[in-house]
Image (cartoon, rainbow, N blue to C red):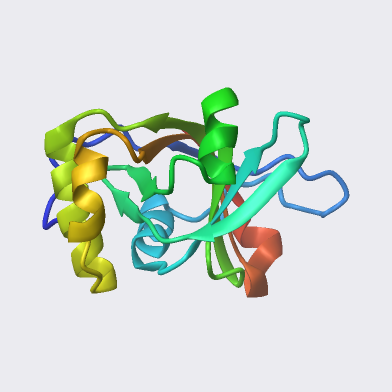
Length: 172
């Protein structure tokens, strides 16, 4: 993973999620800090990606990816269901693998077109997963196979054991 990001987004605003009937307090006491969420996104090995099919049915799949520079990056085959869904509707949901300390992002997936950024993605991705990306890099750099970036618009986090006081929504 990169030592330091080259650009930083403003800290998102934390509040309680709208969850009628769950008894969440009105106070901000116990809200999770964004750095808590970013740390879990960074250390997650697998992520759930939810996209929407053309018939509006949801599609969910596990992917490998990177939380990097305040965004989520992942690649997939250009003919995969995820890529085809995102080409028609870029709205998606990304979730970390740990449901006991969950982080869920809502945003729009956009194909990454910056070849220098794709090279960095390949290097960091290969390091994180100890995976040789050389067989895929030419097609990714030629923009034949997509790398997507998701900048969150909204995020949710919670700790299962302290759900009632830790449930947090962040707006970007």
